[in-house]
Amino acid sequence: MPGPEKRKYAMAIEHSNIDYSERIPNNVDLSGNRRLQRALESWQPNYIKWWQELGPDRSTGFDVYLRTAISVERDGWANFGFVKMPEYRWGIFLAKPDLDRKITFGDHKGEPAWQDVPGEYRAPLRRLIVTQGDTEPASVEQQNHLGATCPSLYDLRNLFQINVEEGRHLWAMVYLLHAYFGRDGREEADMLLERHSGDADKPRILGAFNEPTPDWLSYYMFTYFTDRDGKYQLAALAESGFDPLARTCQFMLTEEAHHMFVGETGIMRVVQRTCEVMKEVWSEDPKRVREGGAVDLDTMQRYINLHFTVSVDLFGQEISTNAATYFSSGLKGRYLESRLDDDHRLTDSLWPVHLVQDGRIVLEDWPALTAVNERLRDDYVKDSQRGIDRWNGVLESHGVDFRFTLPHRFFNRHIGTSAGINVSPHGEVISESEWQAQQGAWLPSAEDQAFVGSLMNRVTELGKIAAWIAPPVRGIDGKPWDYEYVRFN
Ligand code: BYC
Ligand code: FE
Ligand code: FE
Image 1 (cartoon, protein in one colour):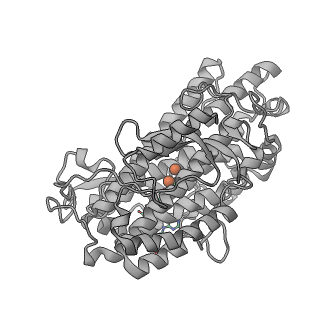
Image 2 (image 1 turned 60 degrees about the horizontal axis):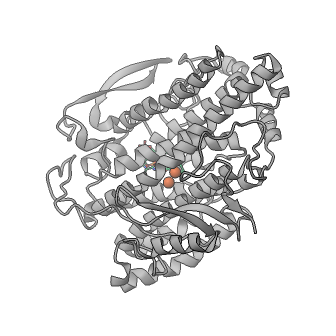
Image 3 (image 1 turned 120 degrees about the vertical axis):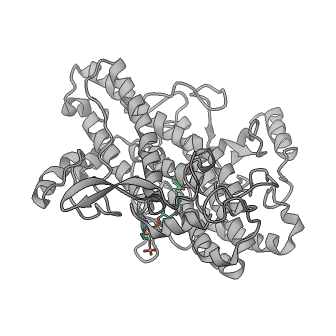
């Protein structure tokens, strides 16, 4: 970065309303609590060691054009500039407090929000924070080798941006564990660096975070579908009666939007390129499309099927007493809880729930309190459809008849009442032999993965992009898409 640009970035960081002069930048007055500060400063080297070992492969020394949070205001919260990896300033930022904030749901509705952990809810609260925290470094681990096959500098930059922010999300949860849960909180914080994605002995907690992300198509699917689970879970936790958790999650959501954007536009660009290749080879035949060097639409649909279903599992059981307890205790609300128009206690309302009964899928009314996982999943499914529609818009604009669809929510599930039951993408319960016969058409096969893998070649020349994906419509922070976002030195 030229001298003046570098100075401008340094000054913005310095004069932000987050204290960047400290070892751990923060807006929680860390220096006013020496014990906590020392505890976090002793966790910090372990974090850096983890990042060096399991963070993005061979990225050390790269100058990357990254955004860094400098404020928690709605406008101007981020500053862009070159950061030498891994000198990104991971910090602790909570949204601004509302001193009069009240709990908006559950048994404690109307009471002042808690500034400390209520003793009776300590265990479930810690569990929620640990589960959330566990996913963040898991995703960094899942993606750590993708730099070796990036389709462009723009994409490489976005990968690193998401990775550093997921690292910051881990910090966000570790702060809560250290600040509010004493010794066992510190132990949990240590374990967040000891479990690893896909590790047979110490796996990550939730299923999706132990799946590999072997290629960039999987990566875009992950950031579209799995980061979107993050959006809904964080939104539900942002309603929490435990105010520090609510404020932490509110700010995390600000960063999350870009992650889903990378997924949505990434897939859109793959679809765009496939449509162009179909024209070049004068055929929609998957075989010809592959020979033309693009991902055929059937393969993309199988990737959608896989990543959607793995993400839908993350919402837990359809009927969950855990979830009911989280809700009535005021720990975890519904999506946009405060905007919903009902009693916010769910003591006698019902919610329609998908269940498998006697080999058939039925919708049955259940007490809404036990169905909050399913309700959040409903919100998620609806939101996931938006991207499908936009990708179909690209197909339509090219005069291609193929349309992507979301599979039935009970297809390929491992959690919930359809776990272990064979359900087709159209929602029919089928036999084991039918499943065996069809699953190659529904889920990515080893052959699909080998093909997609064969397209993955590292492209880092300025202005160049891999042949299987179209360039983005625009770049980052008003820069052109072919700007030198990463400088290798
Ligand atoms: N895999 O009563 P249930 C993100 C377990 S993503 C494995 O439904 P509950 C991000 C469950 O633990 C957002 N196990 O449970 C995205 C329970 O175990 P026990 C992450 C599972 O608690 C991209 C049992 O099954 N945040 O941020 O209502 C990149 C009974 O289930 C799974 C959160 O998840 C699974 N998928 O619901 C980076 C928020 N599902 O008690 C980051 C915090 C369930 O029998 N977590 N089980 O031993 C929660 O709110 C809840 O724990 C869950 C599960 C919604 C996940
Ligand atoms: Fe995250
Ligand atoms: Fe994310």
